[in-house]
Each structure stands twice: as structure tokens, then as C-alpha cells.
Length: 279
Image 1 (spheres, helix red, strand yellow):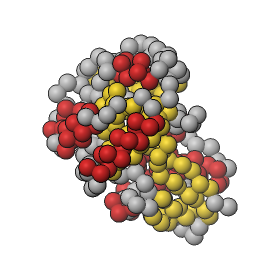
Image 2 (cartoon, one colour):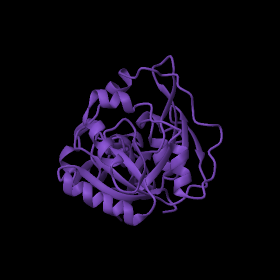
Image 3 (tube, one colour):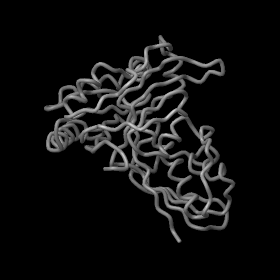
Image 4 (spheres, one colour):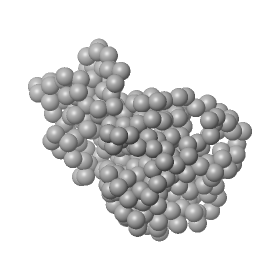
């Protein structure tokens, strides 16, 4: 029996850095949604623990001990499953590619073997708990505090990655302020995507300036998206280098994606609908 699990891209609509613990972990407050583009993880019974990687983004997937799929399998004590990864998301991109794959692996093994996923999966990465949920979520603490977010409208967006990786530790190292204010206590319900974009404009991604310092290409991507016809809000996701722009409708998003792809054929560009499991 083969188990296939979709691993959607994670998008941080906001990312506020609100503190740092004594052990070095950063405290965050983030509104997280998921895209309808992503990777696919397949698991079947196998002899030993193996991984076969295919897909347009397969070339940059790390192998060996550092691979997130194999790490997740070992986390569950599995050593006899054959995994395949259909890779569509760029790596080190700020949209949770490796984390999403780890989360999908946990779900695939749980279904394949009839086992429960442990309550604490933070050792696999701060974004693994939210990726397991796969729906619009307010994520705070170091990634362990999760709350449902209702009242989001349809969000049509364009994701752009300039084919450069950004080191998350290096971005945090260059962060000027680590005790910034969080989002408001309550995230309101929004009647339209314009209402949402207006509210998001009052929020932040506190890693954006540091990421631009680490990789100036991020600034170019933001500029290109800001010039797209019909964009309502442009921001970087995670620690970069992927950025997104929100549009009023699907037609505008598709048109912008086509235009940017034509102008920058070497970039990774996708139009998408953002939300979660209710897509």
C-alpha cells in the first residue's frame, strides 16, 4: 500500500520577532497560511530506509542525515520504509519546503503503520507543528503555540523565488531588534481581501531587512512584485528569499505571474490560492 501526502508551501503573511529565550530560540508571532502548490511525499513498505527524489526542484534536495524526510522517519523509529519525494518547492526559500516534507512524512508513516504522531514534534523544526495542521493559524512562542484563524477571505497570490538560498541563522544573526511588538491580540474577520491586505500592511515581517542584507536579491523581488498590476500587498515569507504579493482576484494573480515569468525566466514563479485544508 502506497501512502501519498501533499506537502503545501507555508506562507508567513506576518512574522513578528517578539523576543529571544535564554537557550537562543526566538519568540515569534506569525499569521501562517498554506498554498495550493507544494511537494508530494509517498511512503511504501521497504527494505531499509530509502529516499528517491524526482521533480523539477530535485537537484537541490540534501541527502543523507540532513534530509528532513529521513530525519522525520527516524524520529518515529522507522527503518524499513521506502520514500519518494516529488519536489516542486525550492529549498532554503522561506516557504517551509523541508519542514512541509517532514510533516508530510510524519503523516505518511502514521497512516502506513497505524501509529500516532508524537505530541511534541518541535525537535524536527519550529515550523513542523504548524505544517502538520495545514490550515490558517496564528503561530507564537517558538512554534508550539497554535491557534485557529477564521474569517480569512479567498487569497489569490503570486509566490516568487529568485533561485537563491538564504541562511535562516544568518538572517537572525543580523536582526537589529529581537523584542518587537506582536500582532494585535485579536485577528479580525475580513469581508474582502482588500480589508485583509489593509490590515496586513499594518503588520510586518521583522526578518525582511536582515534578509535583504544577507541576500540583496530579495529587494529586487519585492520591487518587481510591488510593480505588478493589481497587487494589494507585497511581503517576504519566512526568512526569504521567497516573497509574495496578494491580488484582488485569480485573473490578476495569473496575469502577474505570467508577466514576471516572462521578465525573469530564471526565477521560480507560481500563482496560487492561499488558505489551508479548506482550499
